[in-house]
Length: 461
Image (cartoon, rainbow, N blue to C red; front, side, top):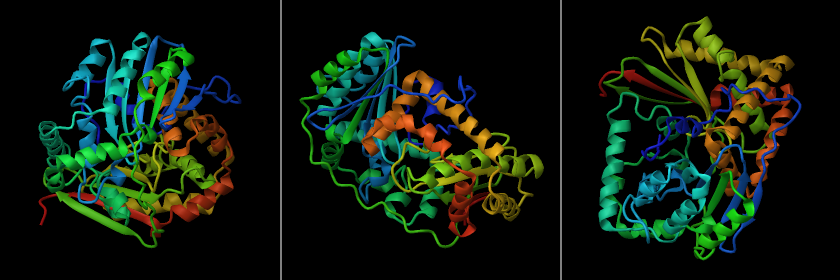
């Protein structure tokens, strides 16, 4: 997936693709909901600031999310959002090339950045007494990035190399997260090559990079989240000190990213000479974000796909033996069901032996999905799914050095102007009924609304 390859704790990578389904922590009391402390402020220049203190350990996590992801990058410049993620580490007004990285590491911290559907994010996890250092550094590159021909040429080559290594020269490169949207969606913004066509990357001009920075990397197009051991009043004062004078920009309006309803099954495929087994993925459109059906789909995901007790695992792995694992989820594997802001898919993928046909696999999938559409989920099954989701949610919010919490807060601030929404999620999941789940399955998990993508070993024709 599109992520800047910087030194980091390996565990942090997992939180970027949270499923809220495989956590191991049990809530202390089943009837008591988690409450995350949230302070929400907006600076005069439009910067959204979220503070969430937690004195559990003496660290602070700083996350800056910009409302620009690969979904809305310019036509003819695929891969531009990801390219710019790399550019953000090439120097700024007071920090030279790669000095941002060294500054964080020399102060005992770790950092990374990534590009997703609807945002590009940068985060640092440092000892809490180094909070001011990180805020200064993030403000320095927000107000003045080093946009030079040398940096552009260098990072363009780095991104092109990454595309070759991670996608073009891998047997299953980009499967299914890069392959599936290009078939399942019709709107170019949702269906283009997010990693970037090499010709588009070659065509990128310095003035376009500068325009992109001025259009999207502005305080009124960003959310800053601080989680950890800090004094909120002092943190807000430091934020104002370093960010308040950065001027707002004329942010480019969001394009139309809507998708028409899918009326018939779609299929895509490719051959991969390096592949040793066939691969199959299937995806269904997700209900609009934050609707009751959206949360019902989250519960269906738990019951159908998450964990060894899920219906698809039982059908495809335990009963039929078609595969040894089936993986997937909402917004999988680029994130979780809350950190995107447009059309998306509930998707699953698996690898299987050549003696197993895709038709047999999909017949079993259809039979499993039809059951939840025909018959309301038993209350006991729904209750187990809620506990499973809640356990994963608690692990995300309470673990990963504060980044899981920062990710949710940033997305709810950026997309909804309401970071406190984090404290409503448990109730929204609790409100899901078997009847709502059945109706959601009937409407969204039908064969006419699905997309199937396959990879076959062998040379392309």
